[in-house]
Image (cartoon, rainbow, N blue to C red; front, side, top):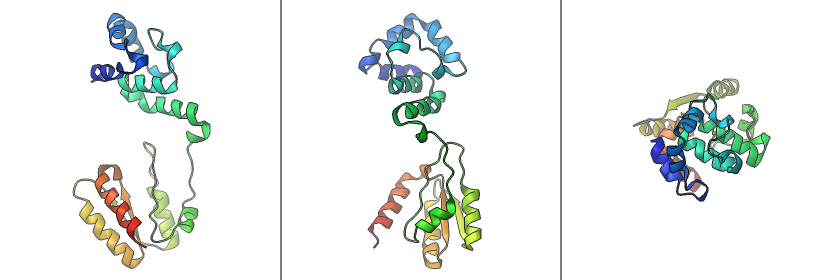
Length: 180
């Protein structure tokens, strides 16, 4: 897979000779790959001097996919600034106060983040029934039922792992955006 990624990367101007350079300096590239944090180490074959943060991200993604997240954070820091990589503690109560029953709250989470306990706590404090469902194959039917019931009763539904059912999320988006 790494080799196919490098071939694809070689289509970009900055990387046209990467395949031949990796073949010629295989030990250097292997040593870079074997580092604990290759994204923090100098890149072989002079790339260290020529790559900006984004192109370095592309290379890390191709050569060391398990280190992509770490390099992506560096790119975001470089491109957008430190405020975009800091963890943000969200006040769930204020989010609820700013929302209304017809507006779903959506959270984009970083790996390992789970706001479920906070959401459950706000629901308990607000005395609102909360039903959670982990999305996956075939769960759309159950989610539709829970959402329909919640809209009637004024309760909450927490859809987890929505990345596993993007078609259904699009359906929900259209449903909520078409309603008055």
